[in-house]
Length: 455
Image (cartoon, rainbow, N blue to C red; front, top):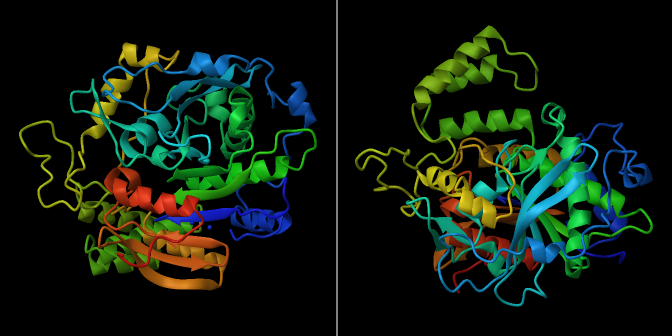
């Protein structure tokens, strides 16, 4: 591996590491993920490779599997699909019978020269297929009939080849034959399994072994993404093993720091006139979010907080709720009038169609994914609290970025990290503002900041 390649970190709300030496780049990423892994966590070693650690790093049975995973077409897909798509299972632990499901879409143009992007939804427990692929940045959106697909012209496979990974086992179509796996799954094993998935997937798709690779995700992927990136960097040092060409990571609306996120929620709600001054003051006085215990006074203040906010979608403050009766889910007056609050239901119906599951090469009978869609759950205030903890020098000060003669959001570049907001988006940025999200990720993959003017 070259000693000087660019490892970038982007937070959208979206967070980029500068071109530097390999040792320095690993140091910066490890600083970012400090405290996520237990101190006793070791790199996946040769014991793992030989089966002693419960998994295999490189499978010997991937030959021909790529063609078996090829999707001829998906039920209800529109005509004129001009890209290749694949899906299936990759075993990460043969002893436990643990396998992760993926959906992979190549770029319609110049796929052989475009980077490889891994997308991880958060939760924990959110389906990257159900949310990421079908509601956010994938090539299709599900029509309200729950049976047919529409083309998403702002899909990220316009600028990259994208893998949507269902992780950990038990999420979406991913599974384990060892029931206890579902009770013992944690961030460390999730990172290790995802790493083993990547090594075995690259044996299945060897043409991508040297491709520029980016790990991306949202929400609780604020933990998944950096831990997987750290695992890749550490294991890249092992001789005679596939080196993953990791060039950067991107985290959207990330849940990174628990205490900072809770404080950010309170400040965000108060600044958006959702709670009273009295409740805001009471929470700041009575609640210590760094503590593992909650006082009775804090609990009472938080209950009032919930009552004052009312029945809204806290994942996107200004979106309507889904109501299947009359026109009560109308998007009139909403910032993003194209957003359909009932899209979860359409996707659920589509992915639970046996014909769809057969086309996807899924062996599961049911897919379940978490619900939630101007984000109050992992708000910009929380992201700023976390970035301030890093105490990074500013390289390029806060400024607007533009798309189609309008402000698309705001961006600030630090030493080793970039913060970019997307105006008008909630928790699911590519779902709420697909064109702006595509423009942002496209700039990121090119190593640029979003455009400073509308020209």
